[in-house]
Image (tube, rainbow, N blue to C red):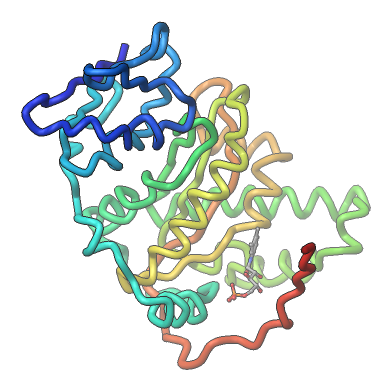
Length: 277
Ligand SMILES: Cc1cc2nc3c(=O)[nH]c(=O)nc-3n(C[C@H](O)[C@H](O)[C@H](O)COP(=O)(O)O)c2cc1C
């Protein structure tokens, strides 16, 4: 059960922790210091808003589920970024489909995933788990199962074949190319327990953070849509992924060093906003 402790030497009783708590379980009675309301500890989602908002750093939430090294990694000023810089960074983000052969050092991937774990999740459930298929040969082996799935789609004349050019992909694969995982050295799979409420949305958000953070490390990513379609439908690939029992792959992302860098942003459609005033 989480515990909320207050350093009474520095708590000013400003009530910011009460305001910041998203579920209203922190109270501040007259002349007292902040505490959980009755049963509050059992309802705490460990989001840390109370702790992060405290102007003097007087409040600590501790719980065995939390990373004990939760000292601030940065101060608010370090995290500030100008809109122009952010806009330029995000506009230059691209799907990378050509990778260098060299692997990404494991500490670099660990650093990246350490950032990704700060992505929001429904009720702060943090239910998303990660499989990093680091071995490039294993990425190819599993991709082969996705090709087998495409072969089965073609032979069963699946309606999907009218949307996707599976025959071209199969032909390319048979000729030594990889239009599914683009010869990426690594594949990152987000997965969760099949009963985890909202995990699908959480995984897509977390993968988006991965997609956005990767270029800061000089890395490239690409959503592996075909791979995931196969993983959701093709038993040999599901078995090949070898996830823990009752866990399902939600989406996969290619990862590696880009073979080249894009020099200008894409053109996009104008944004479509309806203002209701
Ligand atoms: C959910 C999703 C699935 C995708 N699946 C694939 C895929 O299987 N193969 C691929 O080459 N690109 C895939 N993409 C990349 C899109 O084609 C790409 O984002 C789009 O063309 C815009 O290009 P950009 O990401 O470079 O800006 C996928 C993108 C998303 C968001």
